Amino acid sequence: MINRNFMAAAVAAIMWLLSMPNIALAYAIPYQVQEGDTLWGIAQGWRVTVEQIMKQNNFTFDIAYPGQVIQIPITAYKVGTGDTFYIISRKTGIPVDKLTAANPYIRPENLQLGQWLSLPVMAPATMPWGRKASEVIALAQKYLGTPYQWGARPWDTSRFDCSSFTQYVFGANYIQLRRVAAEQAQQGFFVGRDQLRKGDLMFFWNSDTRYNQDYSRVGHVGIYMGERKFIHAAGVRLGVVISSIDDPHYVQTYIMARRIIQ
Image 1: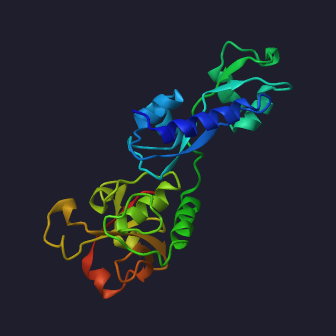
Image 2: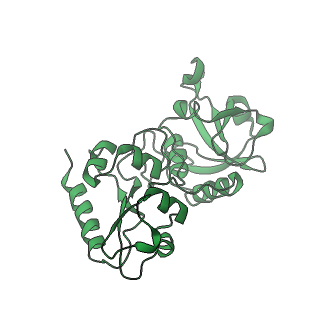
């Protein structure tokens, strides 16, 4: 069942959009996930599909967490005064060729006031890996000193554990990570310690996982920053800090690295 908070947010956004007939419906509307929400329920409420939401947000699995802000795709546009395909493209951020392909039976020169166009759902724009990695690291650094709490709630930026920290800073940059370090260690692909580049995830064992087998041995995760440093939610005493990968403790406990940003 869709909760009241969701319905209020949905109705408010729709009323705001419909109050501006000569302005394009937004290409996407931000929505903060509420307790009890599922992607299926959100999709039903907004009359889109789960697949469309996943594409809009570059999701690889259909899970969103309370507090997470996702983008709801808008899939229709009402033609206003003076609109052309070029102007609609500028308003929505959708290339003209994508608009025309989504509306094969509408001739651009024959647009009619009040006519509805289909808007294709598009994934977030890609960018070079180095820029994306820099943005992930820049966001991570904003949380230096944030307290540590084991089992912290996903997308709660007032406190982190190691994997909620990586999940948040990657997720805010449209890269979806699983919730716990052992699951994150199965994403992306393996890179050697001598091949590290900024943005790679580094995985370690801790006293609770040292003798476990396979991925369950992973007990800690951080983000490589370059210059032989990584940033991580290190523990109750330290919170989010920057450490050297050459620190004897992290040399001893290191397991592997995975490349997520490509």
